[in-house]
Image (cartoon, rainbow, N blue to C red; front, side, top):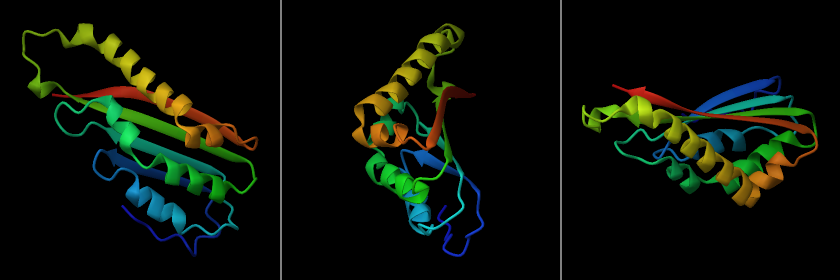
Length: 149
C-alpha cells in the first residue's frame, strides 16, 4: 500500500510489507520516494511475503525492482546511522501437496533453499552490495517459510 510521507519529518521508524510476486516493491518504492532527503528516519523494516501464488518458487524474489529500492534506501539514509531489517517469508502452499508426501521431511531442505536464494540475492545483486556495504548502516536479514494448510 502506497503512503505519502512528504510531511513526516519526525518519522524515525518505518515498517512496510510487500507481496512478491505481485506488488514487486512498487508501493514500497513509491512510498520511499516521498520521504524527503532531510529526515530523521533511523530504522527501516521490510517484510516481503514471497510465493503467495500456488507453486511459486523462492527465486521469484530476484524479479523485484531491487535496484530502485536500494537506491531509495541509500538516498533516504544520507550518511546517518541507519538500521535495516529484511524479513523474507516464503509462503508454502501445502494444499497442493499429495497427502502421502511427508512435508515434515521437506522443511529443512526448503529452509536451506530459501536461505540460499536470499544469499544469492545479496551477493549477486550489485545494488544490494552497495546497500550492505554502507558504513553507517547495520543490516540484518531473516528468511523463513510459512505453511498454508
